[in-house]
Image (tube, rainbow, N blue to C red; front, side, top):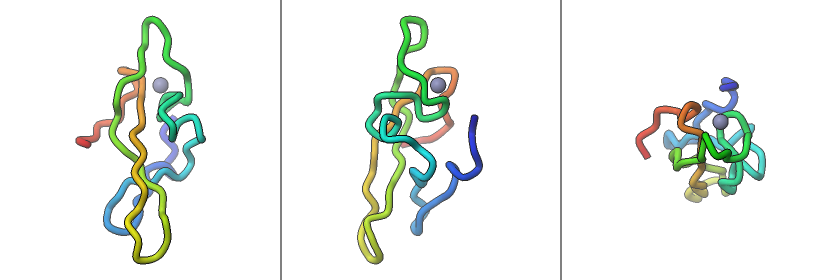
Length: 76
Ligand SMILES: [Zn+2]
């Protein structure tokens, strides 16, 4: 599921939110497969992604979630 586009980084090394849906950004669905939480696969914190807010301004961070089996290795 990991689209290379989603692995893009913003200036400063922030992982980009490019390619994620609104539900993914708001922690409603899995950041990897865009699926909802289920009884056997709850969504857990899976780091942050960032959207640009303009030149010279700090990017906006979004805490995202993922299924345990989908979790991207990320230390944030
Ligand atoms: Zn998933």
